[in-house]
Length: 533
View 1: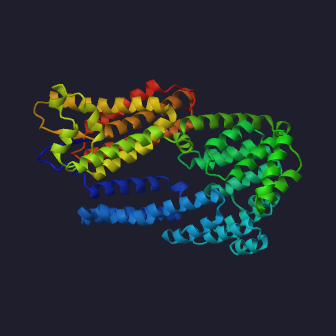
View 2: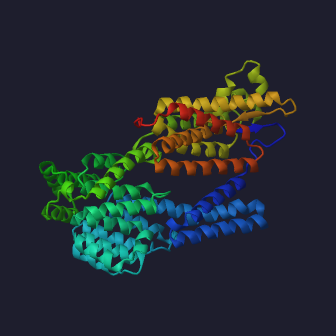
View 3: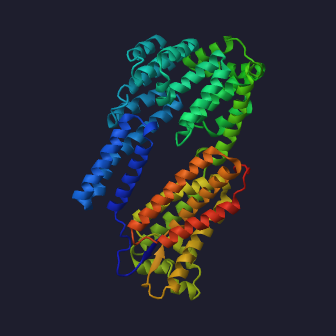
């Protein structure tokens, strides 16, 4: 939300300042999360942050562009590239993942990413049935001393479905401290425990996994551990819930395999065998090997194997899964399309294009004619400006910043409340924040003449609404996931306020009122225990 005056630039928050704030925030967050990141990423974050500090004190007008360029090359592009590679791996599209990894590995040559494409090539060969050739490729990197070597070792054990060997290798060769630094290795160890039937150790390992990686980590990590635990313990309903909402990027064959595993462990042999038989017709060589092991392994009844402490852990995990999907809005966001949010973004883009065609988004007369907020006009009867002003933006950067915030936090709130309550909350915050700005301006007779535009009051209202949702989950359900999300939201709000103080042309009153109104609306509209729509 920007108050604009004829004597000032419409949008003096320059691109340079925007980049400085972006680089500072992301690098600080990466360094704070140091224990969860590898050394390579920490070095990169420190390098980019150092470049920001040096350029800020030497050439401040270019500090954002210099550090922002390094940020794009050393952080943004590698993260986006490897995220795409990992998405392809989760879909078992190893050939494409291998080709993409070869392209992006040089953006971040540390932490084993240079060797990673060779492992993907081996997985592709195994998928095509060339098992011996695949083992030859992967075995070149086999070792217990490096992350890549340990990764290769695990893949070789998995190819042969030698789960007893994998369990023994981890227990004999991998220190406990190493497991805490490599969650992927820990997940495979948990799976080996489930495969050999040591369910009590599996649940204890899941508890350690959640205690070690439970805060501010990739939810896919925890959900994979939960999937193993629920499947091997025969919790069919929980597995279905995880597969429907937490693993939508996985291949259909992988999803069916874990559902069949849960059915088999639950004692539903007929259903499980039918699912496995269907998989055999279309599955690749590694999947068929896994099915063979599953069907020839001794049958285990979880309900007779689990000890009383393990049963209590299982109940705790069931509760944690329910809370995860209620308060981890990112999970719901992945599983659903936020059509109301996308519609609002589209409407903002249309209005921006229209205002550009009429003479430019930095033209005060154009903005006024299209409905920008002018306090004197509002209280003279033009109340419609409280609505129209939230769809107008002064410049492309102003629009981009607000639409990015709406895309993230608007979609989160819509995923939790549903589109009807979301729209009520959005317009309540947007109109309410504009009314607050207009009222305070009229009470301050010495304030200069100005108009205000922007959706940031409504967008920050979504931040406030999300904070209210998480606070309720923490206070009333004691949900740890809600507590952790609330802390992150508070950090976002604090950073936004510091950014507002550094940018005088931004309406601090509009932003504060938006957050406050959103918190109130979220408290009223969200009910603990309601199902995600």
